Each structure stands twice: as structure tokens, then as C-alpha cells.
Length: 276
Length: 303
Image (tube, rainbow over all chains, first blue to last red; front, side):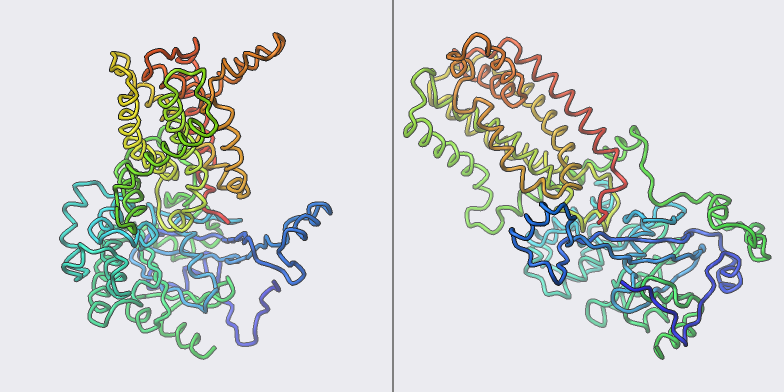
């Protein structure tokens, strides 16, 4: 993959600490909660076939004989040298095109992806809002609520205390007794959000959670996120819906091909992003 | 939480010459990825015991949720297995000549071996099959192989019910030694957990392992004296090869199988060293497996 060349219109925004201080005046009152220092994330991808590779057993054997490595194993450099400081009380939106490294950056902040180089320093344990991976669609909503809460590290008494609230908030009613595979996509998304948001987090990372559900539920979940933002120290939000970002965040980071293209005031960054 | 004075220092350019790493240190921030100490890790794992249990039960429930008979399959699967193996080895190949109560001998061997085999194969896949979960949530990763082991333990309870039924039907008496059945199973479970933790790390990084594992498992099955009695089989060997018997009896799977046969079948004595071997393998596998798995804790989920 070729290095991303700086485009004519690109504003190379400050990456060093002291420049950060100057640009993020709105959040300078808070202490740092997340510091990302020259972070690089490299994925190893298996099974990405190259042009000459036919992918049958004969070519694989030939490769072994010639003592070549597996050409299907490629490295994808998803985040390239990202640095910033997030402070207590910040709600930071992360925008960028598909594949620009937004979700990867969030996972790295959550400590779920080990960096290839650079580091992420955090205060407390950042958590990704989302339990989808722990849920099983063959099971009833009821079982999934318990399973999801345990997966997030809640105790049985906490689960008992939160259970009714989760069912109420999701608004799925008696469907809670049915397997999740029978839910409409909106109902499934509502239940997942209700489970995920039942826990209080230090640093909260939200990935596209608002883009689901009907309008009424979106409004309710946005309110819930505002509450969580107050109880959490810092919130990161990845979404394609720029209105949501502009309404919820006090700072926006624009990622382009794994690098920070712009970092600052939401209105400013979003208008530049829309022009690009 | 907020510290105005240090924040002011930041804003005034106190950080002008300060690296981000130093800034992090000054505010007491820690690296997001760091492997916890071994005792702390055990504590974390204990705190997640409810998740391990719930995850295991949920997997068992969801496994049969699409079938009409549902959870009945937990009982039917071991019954059908017993039937198939008896047909193959008891009737068609007629292995039973020299072994008293061959039915009980065979079914005990098959069920006990299956417990170890399924736990270890499950463990080998537990990390690579759950990458999305590992990349989304924070928990000690050993919870996954452990949950797979608990799932197999739940299945074993049904198998043991079937096994004890078969043993009683073949005319074995209920004796005081049956009280040791839970002890033998606990030792085997300990060995299984250790071996499955070890294989979980191997399977997470050497992906070809999952293709290879069925063959290793089948070789192990044939070498563990499930269908034949090890002393009978090596009796014809020349004197110089007598040590083969000891090596075969040191095999952990053989030890757990022989132990259970000793307990369940009245006139089937276990080899002398069976209890020692069983205890040794349980402790050895758990210590080595747990330590080996923990050493890579921060690297699961990458790539």
C-alpha cells in the first residue's frame, strides 16, 4: 500500500502535546484521561489472495518446496502514527470514510488491540459500548440479557437490579421471552443498546450505536448517551451520522487513511470534511 | 478528579518540552495493554465465574435449540454413541473374547476419552472462534477455554448417567468404590482444563493446528486402550519391548480410563500406578497449561 500523500487542501493539524494544549482550549480544564502517543496498529490478514495465487493445493505445495512464505498473509497498516490527548469531560467524535481506521482506533484505546508501536495511556478501564459479540441469536432475549451483563463483568445482584430497566428501555415487551433470531433488526439493535448501556463506564467508547432503531428510540438513546457522558469521564463516538456528532461532541477528530487529518471544533472539522 | 493547578501548568506550556509519555506518567495514566500478574489474573478469572457458567450453559442450550427434540439430545447423543461403538467393536469386530463385561469396558473407555477429547479440541478453537468477542470486551481470556470445559462437563453429566445405567444393566454390583467416581472425574477435569488452556494458546497462533488436531486426537484414541486392554495387547511383545506397556499406561487418557473402569467394573483392576499417574497429570497439566496461556494474555485477538 502506498503512503498517503498530503493533498493540496490538507491542513496538517498539530500532533504534539503543546500544540494540542493550544487547540483544545475548551477541554483544557480537565485532566488527561486518555493519551494516545504515536500509535500504529498493524493487522495481519489471512486469506487475502494475490493476483498470481490460485489458492489450490498444488500451488500451496509448490510454495512450500520453494520455501516461500504464505502470500495470502498481508499486513494492513490501519492506524499510522496517531497522537492526541483526551481530557475529563470531553466528548470526542471520530469521523472519516469507511476503512479510515476509526473502529480500529477505538479498539486500541479500549486496550483490545495491541499496538504495533506507540502506546495508549488511560485512566481507568475504557470500555467499548457493545455486547453484540457475546450474545447468541438462538437464545431468548431474557437469557441474552443475563449473558450480556455477565460478559460486561456485572455481578448476579447487579444483573437482577438492572434487568427490568433493560427490558423497559429496549421496549421489546413480551418479545423478551422469544429467541433473538425472531426479532426485527430494529428490535435486536434496541435490546443490544439497552444491555450495553446498563453499565457505568470510566471512559466510554461508542461505535455507530446511534445509527439504529426507529426515530423515537434514537432520541431516547441519545438522551441515554448524554447521561452516560456525565457519569463517564470521557466519551468517544464513532458515527457516520454527522448531525449526531455535531450535537453530542465538543471536539472532532477526522481520520483519513489511518492518520489524523484534522482535530478541533466540531463545526469547523465537519464543514471541512463535507467539502472534501 | 480535576486538578486545576496541573491543568493550568499544561495550558501555560508547562508541557511544551514534555513528551506524551511523561504527561501520562505525571497524571498517573497506565498503558491500556499490560499483562496482569498471575495472582491478580486468577482473581479476575474468579470474578468472571458467573460469565463462564452462563456462557457454557448458553452454548449448550443454543447447540440444540434448532432441533425438535431439543435438550433431549444431551442424553440421546451418548446413547447413540454407545450403540454405534458396541455394534462396531463388540459385534462386528468381536473384540470381547478375553475381556469380562466388554460392553461396560468399551462404553466407559469411549465416554471418558470423549470427555478429554472434546474439551481439548474445544479449547484449541476457543480463542480463534471468538475473536469478535475478544476484540469487543474486556475479560481474562482464560474464561473462554474454561467455559468450553464447563460445557463439556455439563455434557459429561448426562453421559455418566447413561454410562451408569449401562454398567448396571450389564450386571455390575454397586460398590463402595463408586464413591471415588467424583474424585476421578475431578482429576480428569483438572487435566482437561490444563490441556485445553495449553491448546488454546497453540490454536490461537498456529491456525493450522485446527486442521491437524482431529488426526492427533484419533491417534491418541487408538493408543489409549479404549477398544482393547493394554496388558493383553502387549503380552505378545518380546521381553526387550516390555517397557512399551509402561509408556502406554503413563498416557493420561489411559490412566483416567483405567481408573474409571476400576471403579465401575468389579473384576477389572487398574494398573498399579493409575492413581499416581492421574494425580500427576492433573497437577502438571493445570500448572503448565495455565502458566503458558497467561504468558500470552495481552496478545490474544491480534491479527
